[in-house]
Length: 335
Ligand SMILES: Cc1cc2nc3c(=O)[nH]c(=O)nc-3n(C[C@H](O)[C@H](O)[C@H](O)COP(=O)(O)OP(=O)(O)OC[C@H]3O[C@@H](n4cnc5c(N)ncnc54)[C@H](O)[C@@H]3O)c2cc1C
Image 1 (cartoon, protein in one colour):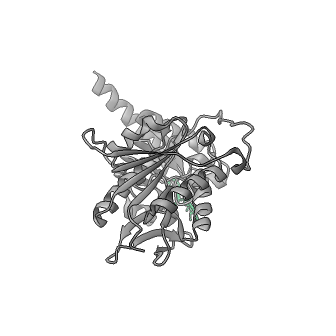
Image 2: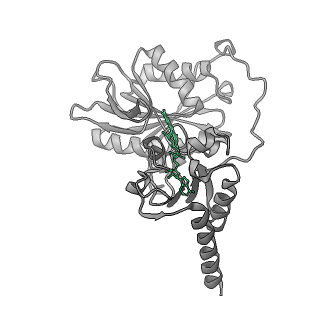
Image 3: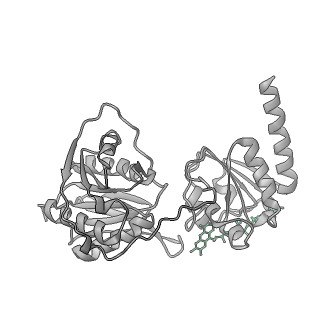
């Protein structure tokens, strides 16, 4: 077991652009590696991606393994599993971390089965215990239980990490690291899937994870028209619109707006919860916001327990008044 060392992060890139989740996990890997006194390594897989290696070093990697090959241009389970398992079998990392994205959730279990090791899905926190084991922490049973899972006897210890829960490390232009190019052994016959075409969504993506200001609506807004009010408030504040699952399930807004355990995890500067009761599964996705404002007609709603500012009242009266005030304040600021 002692031959296993270092913490690896599988780095996702799309069209030669690093995904935020990978930088978030790299920041966490840096912290864990420092705690254990080992290296944080980034595993960058793709085609003509070497140019991204320096950026990964600036974000905290000590070593970047670049696995570059035309057959790795687009993600396929077969190819990525093979090249990562080959590298892990030869270099023996103690830990491998992945983003819990569509790709990470597809890849990590395949690697875990092939390497006969343990995997925890969708972690929201990680740590190292006194024996140096990776603590893999995730909500279970609808968020009513927090499970801490360890993998004491198999290596590498592996986890997928939910996007948005870890903070990206700060970029440090002065950081130095090593870039190691790996020549993968991969042939066309190793890949059983054929990509016929890649369809990019035409609809505008809601970028909740990167928004500084989010105005969210819940069941309390009463119907799809209620979101017009939410949108208006978001617009005057320069923010984006979020929603509770109750609002999404009612069909009032599309699921890409959903915040919470089964939706997005967000960390804005300002989160305004309108007509949202504050169920634990909702809070799981927005409790990390810097400032939380709650508007709810029920003074006993649990959302007020975590709100920095609370307004008890009917949102159909409160929000238009707020919009007016904000517009006024903006006008004054311009004058
Ligand atoms: C496994 C699992 C996963 C889940 N994942 C998520 C998730 O990702 N995200 C999520 O949000 N939920 C999730 N849920 C659902 C969650 O438990 C709650 O049911 C949901 O968050 C409730 O949404 P809500 O607050 O909009 O509705 P409600 O709980 O019905 O709250 C509505 C609130 O609006 C207030 N209100 C009503 N009218 C007005 C008015 N005119 N003015 C002001 N206030 C008003 C009420 O006082 C009330 O507090 C999950 C549940 C499970 C079991």
